[in-house]
Image: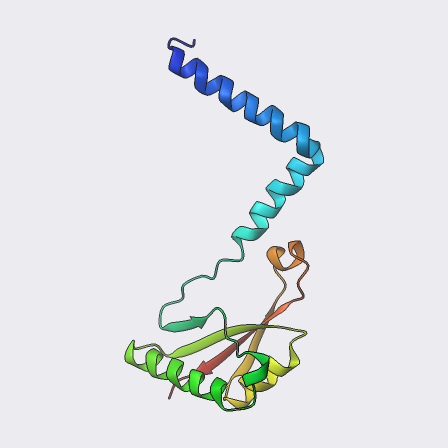
Length: 135
C-alpha cells in the first residue's frame, strides 16, 4: 500500500501533526477551530458587478468632524464613476451609530441587516449593509 519511503514520511508527519494538534486543543478545540475557519470564510465580501464595496472606512478620532470623511467619500464616488460602477456599498456595525449617521449624511441608505456566522463567531454585532446609488 505504501510503496515509497517518501509516502511513509508524509503519512507519519501528517499523523504526528494531527496528534500534536489534538493533544493541545482536544477534540472540542479542534471542532471549534474548524467552525471558526468556516465562519471566517463568510467574512470575505462577494464581488458584485457594477458595485464598489468599501471594506474599511475610518478617520482617526482626533481628525473626525473636520470634513476628511466627506473628502474621502467624494474621492470614492469619483473612483466608482471612473470605473463605471453604479452603486457604492459599505457595511457598518449595528452598534456604530456615528458611522450610520455619517453614511446617511452622505446620501447612503440602509439596505439590509446581515447577521452572519463570522459576526457571531468573532463576537461582533450584526452589520448594516448600506448603499449609495450613483446618479
